Length: 132
Image (cartoon, rainbow, N blue to C red; front, side):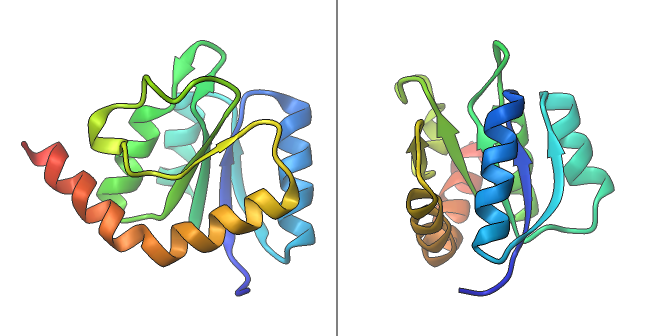
């Protein structure tokens, strides 16, 4: 597995720490972290371009979909993590991989591999749906 620079957007502090540890154990670096939509958008705007983003869907009652849409615009691979149902994901983001909490390091590694293997098609489909 290649070493990636990853942005982690997760509102729960302990889960964020655990995910960061998992990513470090997998050989990746953390390019930035955020706990809100504004912080997530800021990470994407102010950091050197990361290789991947991991987005918690529910950020303390606020949805991370604006960050996801920005990732689509940037053609940045990303996937969601969530402890909630998937039925509220907007149609244009419906092809994005979702990892359910609680997850393991193996789950995160598999999601990274799958996201990188499929992101071009996923991003193009989402860009097409956003353009409508």
